[in-house]
Image 1 (cartoon, one colour):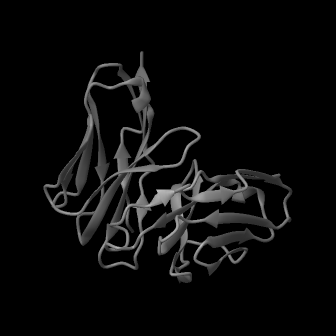
Image 2 (image 1 turned 90 degrees about the vertical axis):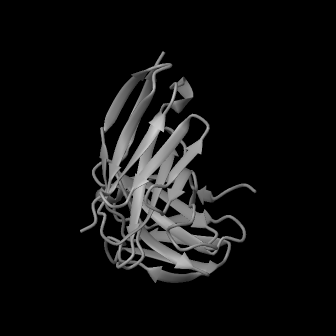
Image 3 (image 1 turned 45 degrees about the vertical axis):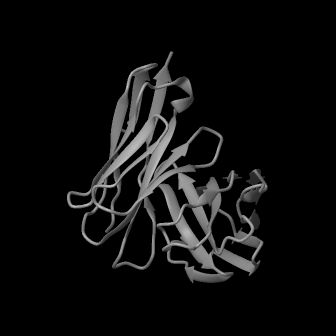
Length: 113
Length: 117
């Protein structure tokens, strides 16, 4: 069974502070890892897609790393701003399964003014 | 581009009624996905289409659920008869399909919040 786990479930961070959270996934037969940003009352918005071990992606103050050998990805936010408040979802797929994408339950980030 | 369009945005119905959710993918996208989001299970893939053909419906929870894609610009997800446990937010997403499936970015619609009383 493919399980994608995210931690922590919820996080409160002071404005201006940097933060990070984790996505864990089965490392066998890894295919792709996605990060999405999901604001309340909106739809999930793609941040990054990563496929290679050691991949690092960056978009403004947000960056992500990928370790496919040990099965984890980190998402970093530098200098948190109120607009960063959202749920961050990761999703993974494997190569030897019927094509599926499995989402974690997300990390809900609250930025405190 | 208007993005992925879903309708209705909210649906409240009574148990036993038929519910039809609609989706218009981004023009030119070859893949269309239907997801369900609940507090308990998070975001689950129900079914996806490639060039209007259903490829994998193994995520559809029961026979009460069905999905169609009669053309490249329209898809429906139908629940008949609906039950209270079907209450959830249903998302439609589409992707170009230029890269490898599920390594492509998916673009999500705004979702339909379904409440079955």
